[in-house]
Length: 278
Ligand code: PAF
Image 1 (spheres, rainbow, N blue to C red):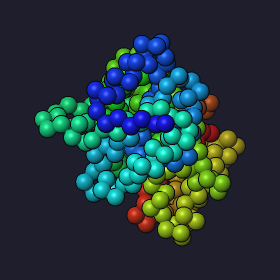
Image 2: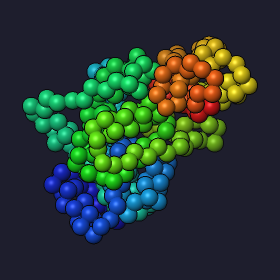
Image 3: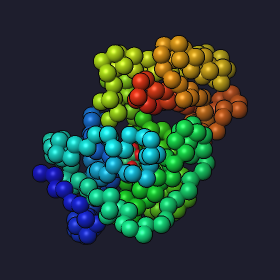
Image 4: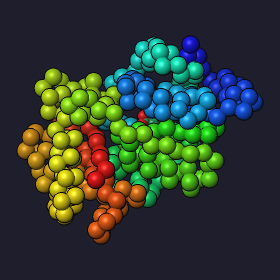
């Protein structure tokens, strides 16, 4: 049985009961449209915590006016059924009016790992993510929070925020779940036509090939540029393919640095992102 609460009062009452019993509480923030990647996060949370809260909220603050906020899939009923099947006790699904009541005037500004990459194309994005995630953390007061490595830059931004704001909790990154052909699971994959779906795994294939070339000693920036060109030739509109320091996302400066390869590219109207460690 998965209980669904929509008010912060109900959420806090349940979590307070758990805390009173000395239980460790984890949160998995999502925008719903849950797929196997989200459920994998919940399983990872269940392994570390006694209780798991899954938040489901399509956050208007992280979408620009021209983006897909209106058509973003909203599937609360099937989401709750999926959570019930894997034994997640609590779903918290606030309304936008509850999260951002009239007069709401405070939001977070993030730099560091938020600079460049996604921010070059979605300048509003990480401010919106950090604001809602901070609010969710303050509402749940979890010991642990689980995020997918699929959104690697987001994971680093949230880790930085938790450290900078002295939030007494741990942020855990969970490896990306992929389809058999390598495509990273994403709620936005549902937008792909049959033809686009066949092309989509090429992003991961290019990242893998690029990682191999970097390991073999090729220059990371040149390798990333060659991958971007290959994706463009295949029909993608490439926002970026970049080799960055895996901890800071700063450009790679010297041999031996931990490297992460990150990519964002559009097929038709769908924007996909992916990344891998080198
Ligand atoms: O990754 C997401 O689904 C969202 O950016 C998040 C973390 C739930 C914040 O709205």
